Image (cartoon, rainbow, N blue to C red; front, side, top):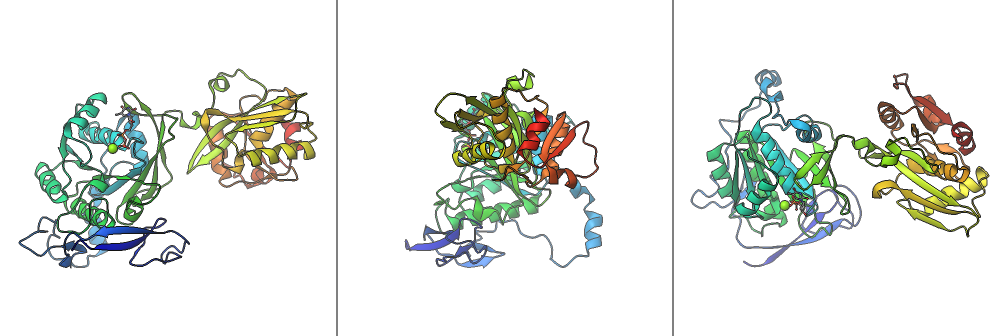
Length: 482
Ligand code: TYD
Ligand code: MG
């Protein structure tokens, strides 16, 4: 006893092994196996239904057991009896809709949902708000109990947060780390949903390892999964993501749970994104966008346009602005690129939000292939609201903004640009062109400038009243726009 056991876990796919491998044997990515230490606090006696439990006086009997005898069932019989299973717990209001969309249309009864994210990003806030929403029960006016269990905070702390969020629903708050205790108490309440904050702080008695260790994290999650499946109570589980990977993180759990959502946000911005990376009940194509306010998270209504400056939306048109169409996950954003060319100066370049090497390349191509006399110009580039442009799909907008400033000819604010620029000044295709173009059309833009190849690839679907203009190279673009 007290001996340390060493595990190796792949930070990419969660594969666990007893020894180190240079290349993960599961996902075959190299250099991802990380070392974990697990101190043995007790012996494991046996394995029941995939759970390691002690065989002493009924410990483990709390684990929900399978009802009845298990046997293979006919698919037809299953489907006949399961019509009600299409029902999902509704989440209403603009906040609820946003969450619901990411979940694939509401919370599925009996599902285990993991919400991961960096510490401090707002997971506890999100889950408390979701708990309140579930409790309020959509439109039928009825109120349902929901249990929020925290192993991190005291009930007073949660009470304070609920106060701040102005939550007055029928939420039961419980502070505990003992899964066995938690599930026993929760079963008595029979809530409409259970929130556990967080998987790193709960433990299962009789299982070796400390809370947050791989074995505990895995076993606790499995216990929660079985609880969800046998009671049909959906469980929402919070998991901290640790960048350094020294705590068994949500990666390990992704295989066990039904749904994995990640919450992301920049330190300097109040925007928070909720992304589905796994969903057994829906697509992972959805991204929820929220804003963290002083009274909790609010849905952002005009998400596609949140990276455009107010001047832009106000139709006051200045030279040096162009709109790029960027994909983040599966969501499309319009992003404003600003350029300022100062003639008669030393030719310095200041770049903000774009990789300097990419900006250099675009400027050089403009000089060489489009004949712009930028050599004697200082060029400043900026991406509005702190967004970092990583996609080459933004190249064309960067080039257009520089042209606009250099020529001192504003680009009308209902034109958007999509395309990568090659060294010959040619425009190249980027992934998911169609989706980008449709978003632009839906937002009421008049024109979208794209590579020639994209024009052909586009179907005959209606694009509202937008014109899609295919250009072969930068010269084409300049002739079209200015
Ligand atoms: P929290 O939900 O505790 O994050 P996590 O559980 O992911 O660690 O919230 C983190 C931050 O959110 C905290 O710095 C305070 C801020 N916050 C608000 O801005 N408005 C609010 O209404 C609440 C409750 C929190
Ligand atoms: Mg928290």
